[in-house]
Length: 504
Image (cartoon, rainbow, N blue to C red):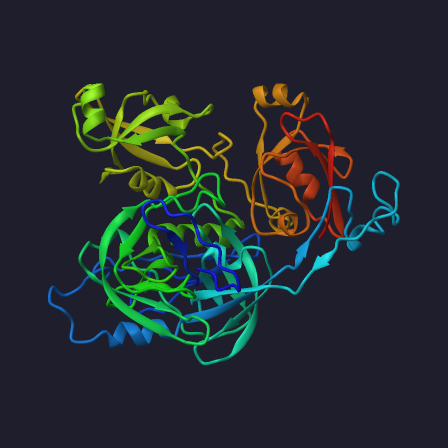
């Protein structure tokens, strides 16, 4: 939960789910080895090399431990406090051009009139949370909602030193973000295996909330694969498969560490179930299996490379078993397909019940999401389905959300803008009455969100007056941009051309 002067309460469903606050970044590692290894790649971004301690990860004694001091001391040294300074409220219309673009447009707007200025209203608000150091060179993992919309970030270490931080990348679909501070030889946590975590095992929740320094609470894993429908407001393809615990977690702990008794990072604390905004018995953490994949992709590609089956699914229950005469009572039923579906092309049919992914039992939508979220486009997965009582093992080559097998590297400018793009289908072109263009599928933290009122779904037809007809063309047009960029396009259902001038 972000600590703001006015905390917005989320409407309760059964319980009210509230975001916490914090951050952590680590990798699978033997306890006797250095905490992490980062190697340079073509893009000069760090690549996370993951090694998993299969023997110790998730291992716990059956009896209640005498104390939790080993894991506590290890984790608290690597958990930090994050202060986000948010941009002051601005009124920015499509007619306004930032100062950085005055020279670009000769001091006038694209329409010829004088350039109006944005209007600041009030002081800049602040929010706070926690984070986890996952590399001695200052890489920190936290929640996306901790850093979302931030103009600047300040990190306070356990030893009270403070540093300015930069955002390396973020993923609203999982609520995970990666930031970095300029520091060396920092204490860091390693990722443990959330897949080996068992319901009933002891875990510690570690945070660094404002004015309290480090806090450590103990509890047990209450459930795995929980979906609480909390990420949908900020993402279009949310992946929710939370680890649920009864360890007490309160505001300021978002992005903090959930660790096993070996001090390995098995989750990033993200939300609590509460009607008051304070801890009421349940907390939820993004499992390390998801968090690790996200930060590894961000460090290597600059964006998350997520594979998709391209299916619409629902959980099997007693009613579905009866209604569809299903031969299994656990799994997820395939209801429909995306337009360019990897699953359909591989032979999966509507009505099939998916029971396993790569040998892992699938009993819920959340479990399937977690299993697939660990893969990138072009990866092969073995999908076991039950079709009219017959078991079939089908190899599926996953695709991107745009229906391709290629995982594109993001451009620096695209990251700076904070937008994700996808090619238009033939039907979308017809509906928008355009011959070519690309759609803004998602808006993340960045210049677009900070300085414009652009909405998801906007169709870009020109970049700096140059027509673009594909994601590749758009990325090429944006590559290496400095100073500013003019984006032109329309919204589906509207014939009015919109212009967004954005300073970089």
